[in-house]
Length: 159
Image 1 (spheres, helix red, strand yellow):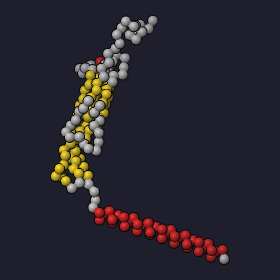
Image 2 (cartoon, helix red, strand yellow):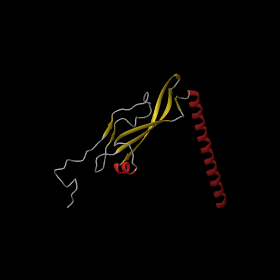
Image 3 (spheres, one colour):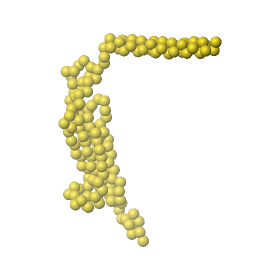
């Protein structure tokens, strides 16, 4: 009865082939994001203990410069990661020649991103501040005028 591997205490446990990526970088790290591959753990979660972990990495070339120092631009890459587990039954059904394990494929995007970090000068800030204060005064004046005219119309009707 049962006759399965889990029921027989004499049978060794099935193999488990987890993969841990300590670090995988492409160029200098991008300062505004984290590396999605760093510390990634891929655990096989099936009865056989083997499968193919397929990790697809899309890389976007990025030029990062900060403030007034545009000449100190850093060439780096931003990465997006998609992981997929292919079960051994699927590999066998497709007559695939790939073996169970970890497969990392990466693709470079032909478009580049130029990220420039900077601040506006003080005159732009003062102009924005004056326009906000002026807008508040105009809005308060319109609301006050509407309320005053409505109150005067209601008082006139009451008389």
